[in-house]
Image 1: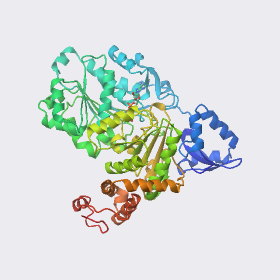
Image 2: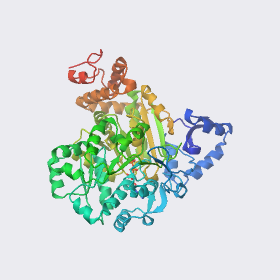
Image 3: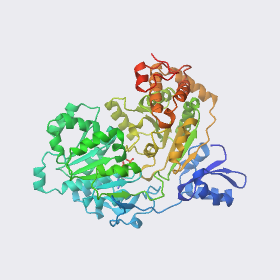
Image 4: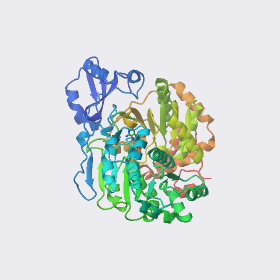
Length: 588
Ligand SMILES: Nc1ncnc2c1ncn2[C@@H]1O[C@H](COP(=O)(O)OP(=O)(O)OP(=O)(O)O)[C@@H](O)[C@H]1O
């Protein structure tokens, strides 16, 4: 950001990029905020007023003030308070609210003052003493808004589709009532259901499944007769089969592929699924999209029709609302804690985008990281990349630049993934370079900055990725780094407060360091990254449609890795990508 530019967050949390002139602010306003900003611009706000507002808004946090002075990612903001309610609808058309009082629910969701919590305490709810003790030991006093809104409805036995912002406690919102349902089964029902699975939680990634099981264990601490198990890909299925046999648990948390494997290959497993009373799809929109849909349908078909089904996510696109009846009963409730017109991202996370050519992106990334590391000793950054092999490339380049890097993606062994994930959860002063395996659900505390390099798979993925910071009402920063030909993506997030950050002019010394780092990265890594990169953009509707342009863009990417000529690609891979007849690609 150029010197003198400041970012204000006007009413409704919308950003206004303002340039300070000696006595007035000249407002440069993004299209989406023109309406809100116009009165401010017309009023020729006095700089002294703005500065005093900024002081009162951020004076309590000297670190933030320093950030304002030092870099282009931390901005002073005036955050306008707004009361947010909860919408609740019948699956078929509008329904009557079931007694949730939005006024009671403590103002802003996700506010910096902890008001992502409601005013209701767990001990005011109709839950068992065992659950209450577990909740207390976990350190939870008040319910979050989504917990308050969904608990009574789930306890009534309704199917629920719930939408709530990232990091606002959806896991407890589905686990706690599910545990309550299981704990109230009568003794005869229990005997009948002995060794069956009564609650099945499906998660799209292994890290998330493990995390959900950890949360479940906390809540089950005093429920001696209930237990939880995890089945996930990347581990030995025989070991899981032995565990399932030796120590059958009532709650099973699973990823779809591995659960289907057990369904097909583990003796007695399909019978155990007949005992399912509650089925949860965490990150429901992801599980119901085409990548997982078939497996999920198969799994649902193996569970009883009269089960209770709970679908949770921070994003519920219209397509998911259209098809969620495949999973739920007709009279399901849609509980939405994101108020109509409110953004799906958190107002306390400043979201920026930068548009820069690929050949500058490693230098820009390095520059942004160096500044962030210098200003915040407790830095904790996640960099999202488009594919596993591009993730590996970025991690290797940044490691060569002596940053404290960890790498996680689907091509790593599960034991390496678990180790890195556990370490990142506990640590500060570290940068995690990740593919989308960390995009959803994973709860790493105190992430200071999320960087997304390249076009995200979609609007939803952008929202989930940025949701790794700003959790539990904390502040955070986000940066989306795009090439000029990727900037069409910005239209899909135009309703979110994503503001343009001015591309920094990168020192020649930084560029020299980056060139050196790129030279030290193995050719094999670059070849794999190039292939993966082509595969990703080839399947992008807008970019992959024009194949000759894809050739040119591929050359640009390859130059950004320091290669004069793009690597050759095995014929088979070119054929699989449907590119074998496209002139311009070299094959081996
Ligand atoms: N009532 C509560 N009070 C305080 N902290 C809570 C409460 N409920 C959950 N938490 C904590 O809030 C954090 C975020 O919870 P969780 O991971 O379930 O969020 P989420 O809404 O599922 O996020 P995402 O959309 O990213 O999956 C966790 O660290 C969890 O332990």
